[in-house]
Image (cartoon, rainbow, N blue to C red; front, side, top):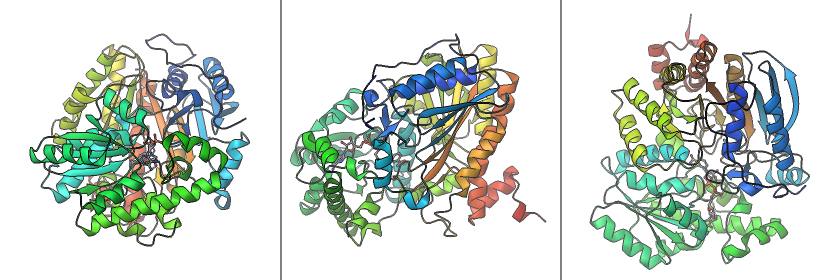
Length: 556
Ligand code: NAD
């Protein structure tokens, strides 16, 4: 079977409402979220089972998808379905506290963990690329990344521009599933964004969903629109059609007035980055027929792209890698200064991780937007003093177009997520919500990922590549009562570069669910606190002391 095979493809949409199609809400949550990941409103290429992030898939092939659905429909409340890289491989008797689904996606033994071997295994039908939330069934569309991107640009504004991006121009590229959040995150912070994208359909989609304001077909037009808006201190986002590896160097040569530069093309996968001189229309065929030649050409193009980013930094712009490994690829192509600019985590996000903060998210299985609005109110009510949370939720209500099942994300920390989760469960029990909700998170979280080019870049104690933490995280979530738990390799930054884990827990309003939620949503962010205490972060140690997280090496 070919990895990109569309055999058996059909449109998928999760059931809505409070009727079960399975034997319990744990199974039902997994079933609906798998289907929701593949909803054409949610997934980037649903016919190929590709959800986001280059080739991040929800199931290995359509036969596997059918078998997962069939099995979930009959799975009992004391059974667990095992999924190996998108294929259901077994059902085992467990118990009611155990997860209903356990997933391991894309994992390879260290010396074999490279794209070439991965592609070989993938084309032999033996594995799939699970990205972070594609293969673990908790992708909620572009909103998921919008919050993180909004927080990151807010941190850039706080660091360099007096707390607002008003009067600044950000240059970036990539308007895919994740990168598509950039234009809105910049305008939510008051700034102007120019977003280069080589696929015209991606620009159209972001405009249609109101994540991007206008499209420009040439550099001059984009710069004119951007500088006019900047001078009027008016937020504006411009989708610029073209190849970033060509346009970013051209803009540098023109001395374009850019204040902030980053990138979210799918650079983690050299077969998904458009080389210089290749027409977008020829890209897929070229990558398929001459992968080795394409990889070299893509890496050379990334080197040019990164060299121009460093050039902007030399001129004083704020430049950062947005977690797509573009520095690593440029370095492979021989560009020596690739790591001259930092990754976004050490630059802006790590202090949040020390507090166990990260991308908490939930989805309404009812399909009813009213349920999310009720949970929004509950969150605002629970954390009245958290101003940025209030600003985010209000803006999200105004600007976020739900894709698939209505969902919400906000960053909450240790001691907060469990409160929100228990409140949601009570709201299901009381009938305030019309059906259960699922509560999960991205794998990009405080204590669930080892990724030396991203989440664990430049750890204080040099422990960047230690991958015990995500494995302990997954085991803790299994032991605490999560509804499905996943361990993946290669998400975000590509094969060989990360190991990460995820959990999703269903709030069905029962007392048992409440007990599971309290443990999972305490212990899961607790892993972030202990991981950062262990690495020597004082802020994390303070959080542990204040909020009572036990750290044996600090006791006695
Ligand atoms: P995607 O594959 O959906 O989108 C990538 C886009 O880049 C595509 O639309 C493609 O047409 C475009 N592109 C490719 N080469 C280009 C070029 N040379 N010039 C202009 N456009 C080009 O991927 P995505 O889900 O948007 O993810 C983007 C990257 O961000 C991935 O590497 C992903 O791993 C990473 N990522 C970062 C974070 C984060 O928190 N920072 C989170 C998730 C993913």
